[in-house]
Length: 145
Length: 117
Image (cartoon, chains in turn orange, purple):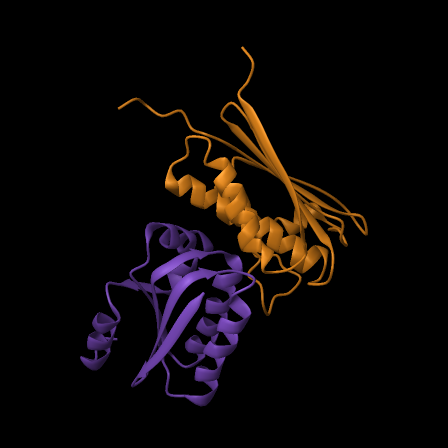
């Protein structure tokens, strides 16, 4: 049987106003699957963190484009958030809880939230080229009734 | 994002409505900081989050910044009527360990006046 699939793609300028748009749009798309409200909130937080990272770190709050792609196949949702900014020199270090390059303003929790709220988080980054964050979450099997 | 502030004695009550994220947090941060600068008596920060629909690490960062100042003043941080989503985010961030949940701002004030804080 063919998998039930759907997708959406959009690009937004690196502008803090668009963080809310991105997380809401992805949550709206994701709501085609059978999530609980809590799970949809989790997805919103994860997307918010990834897009915020692109704007703050990828583009240093400057100009740029953030590309967002969300798709699902059956119960598995995949969200790709990509920027073409400065990239992350050490992807492992960047994902450690509490690690931040702006300690006076940031908590270093962005990746922690993404890992906590999604099943899988993949980060591909190249310095001066950009960063791609892939967030994966599967609708849990729920018992009937 | 809308917010209002009220000071009652040593307490600052910040009432939030909407979504606190990368876009909305800088202005809130600035307004909140003003109270701390101009009113050095503030020891209790009461965040009324009943109508806060969303918060992420950008929003939490603002509150953590104020907590550091509260700590220096020997003060405390409260969250009033946090919905389950907000509670979860607070738990996960570790902020739950440095703050307390309350049913209402009045409860916190009553405890402060009764010398139980």
